[in-house]
Image (cartoon, rainbow, N blue to C red; front, side, top):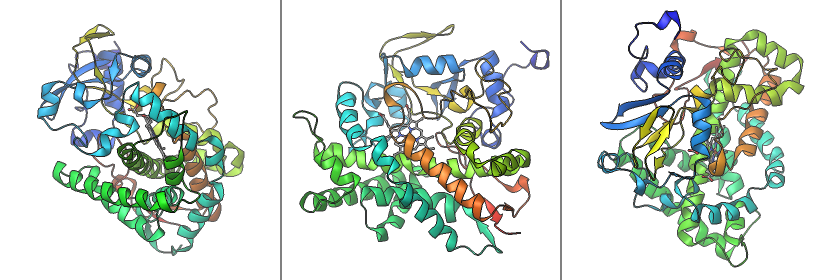
Length: 404
Ligand code: HEM
């Protein structure tokens, strides 16, 4: 126990309280050191928060852990913490355990190949430039909306094969999933499911060179995706791939503006971009936590026993700064080479879109910094706020001037 924290009976700020989101790291550091398996109240339910890298990695790889919300205990279900129950969303990969997960993932992986994703580079570049063309470089601009959000929604809309005029609708439906009430979230989910079902019907008769048509056609022996699995997983791709990537771009840009020396290094040597994006994913990545895990039997983690069915949350933002794994974990170092960050998860649910997210992150930053190397904040740093959201860590707004 470090001397500075002797006598401190709890973390400096309660996890997931309002102040926590603005700077979670002192709380994470305290928990990692003193209570790495932390039972806490969340929405009236006991939730176990894990902050150490080794524990997080072990849970990712533990076959006793389920993501199926039906394995949760009664408290969790009664509190309405389950996500998308009663909709096709439960068919999405993230909420499926083996053997269904194995079967669906094999089919989805045939579509989300590294080769196909690499082929989207021109699309991402075109969309980045197009969005920047629309902005007045001398005016104050809210970049989080105008660029960081619009880029991934347009990319995912286009690669899935959704008509361009509909991309704005995707955003409207997804927004309520982050933060608003359960009713609003469910209404957004249902509208989006209906829309996705209609598109799938249209693509069945009129396929094109896009991800939805490829998912419809994907076969593994005599296996193929059912209609509900298609709907749930197309929805899953939009919801997993948009807010996260938007937050990666915004958080990354803010971290670079906070560290002008690191920004300069990157500008002087663009070949550092690959490493820099990994470091930005580690330093202030967009996935604060994973989705919940529910142990199928009582499990021992560290010195604690977590009873079957009790929800476990893994704080990836904490694991990514574990001093047992990373040297100088609180330092942003765009040249860091030994960087096994865990922002895309591990094990069977490892992010299916990681290659696309990396491509978008690199191109978004490269295009912006090449065109506007002197970009700066348009407000004081204290005015920049993070959203109070459990899973995705992202900025409320990012007001900048592109060419001060
Ligand atoms: C799963 C992170 C972008 C699709 C995950 C998981 C993480 C993650 C941590 C595992 C969650 C868990 O185990 O609880 C990220 C980050 C992104 C990003 C940090 C952006 C920077 C994307 C994109 C797509 C995508 C662009 C697709 C277009 C998925 C899917 C899964 C997933 C389908 C579920 C995989 C499975 O359960 O087998 N992602 N993601 N993600 N991600 Fe991503």
